Length: 118
Image 1 (spheres, rainbow, N blue to C red):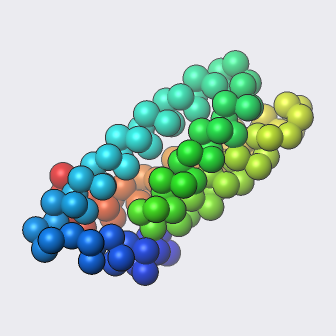
Image 2: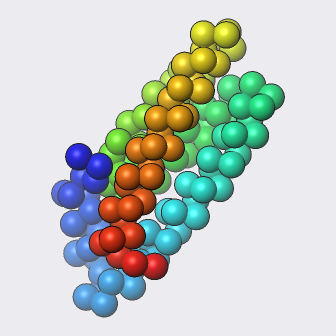
């Protein structure tokens, strides 16, 4: 599943019924993810794994808060692997995970926009 409906339903329950709260959360999240992916791409150019780990941690939390569980889970892996020594293998693993998380985000974005057009 792309979205943890238990978490997402809790956010929907906080709304006043007009979906403005959910829409605002989704809009903010989508902007954060795009910005964070840009920062991650720049950090990968210089192989700055410390920055990648911190960005992975940030995105893990904001994704989990909205119930975007696949993205959150992959970001946790990025966070943990990027903490390691910057070897060729580590760089390769992080590069692969970044590609995967962007695909997962693409699916989540479609779901979120269908649920809640911004």
